[in-house]
Length: 474
Image: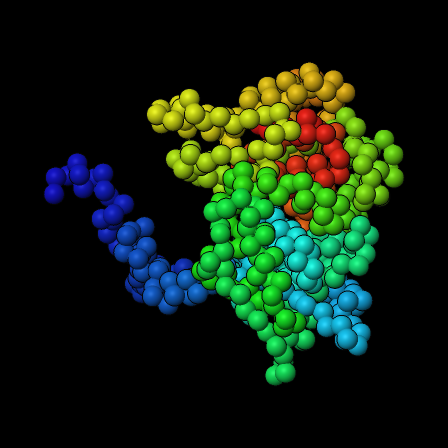
């Protein structure tokens, strides 16, 4: 090897050195030689023995598990489960001559976001109500593993959350003041106790022949006719063929044929957020700055948080989802296409131009900070009293710093986001409902038209009599 190359790689080829030591300070003949290793690749490899490598690999999951546990163990919501068990309709004393009927949907959504589950539960409970049958409500379920928790985003989260930790009202077994004689919903636990014993009589109806492509009214009428002929007390819907209400139904205008009936039904007129959620909203009154604290305490108050615009800024998974929407040619969610809403999504000019279509979708689905500031500036011209912004977002706190600075430069008094809200350990896992409860009370709501969260907020606001003009989209 040439001397120049050998010199450049001298650290690799450095020979072993020996240090000459005398046996004692006065000795002249006796010597001891001690081997001294140079810094070489052999020494580097020697340090990583098989045992050390295996031990290191074994410890990695241990450290990951410790990091996950250090973020906290989720609550079990035992007090709320006890509340559900003690609902009056869960009494086993049956009035002579009257056998209640129950309808359960075992194929309900699980493992999806809360708002996908909520919109389905509201429609299913609506179907049960118009059929004069008791709806069976389920936990909000993230996992069916036989463990109380599951791992999501490197943190523990409850595998099951009782529905009454999120919402109150008829869908979750609450009373119906607007229909006091209607049968109240019961829990899946109660249904299992009553309907899954050896003496139980169950009737199963398959969704295979249901008109899933029809308008909402026709779909509901079909189910009402099928349910009217059932005499057994326990009814189950087999949706293995196809969902009773699928994503295409919620994502298109067919649901709007049900609007007038749905919005007047107890599912929406008597809907309320759970006391746990309402307590979180009240706890953060200093951030929300209501004109009167009573506006936060009263779950059915129609008074808005004056001067506040709630902005739903979806991030995270939407970075991939928004381009997919453009590729699929998707429209806004069905409720977000209601004729009373002022903002429309029209993709027709971009059907044959892929790049222009993608840009149009991103403007409305994944807007930049500059576009968000401009959009809020336009809305403030229509509502001059707006001064503050509340951002519902799955973005990290640092990711919203730029937006906050830009809005303050544009004349807004303040920006508060989901990351600023103070929550206890139980409220942390229902934070999405806390966000929605705040958005429901805002003077103006600006949503993402493709989002089920925005769709549900719009629906709940309009059910409370909020004018359609105050519901806008990015």
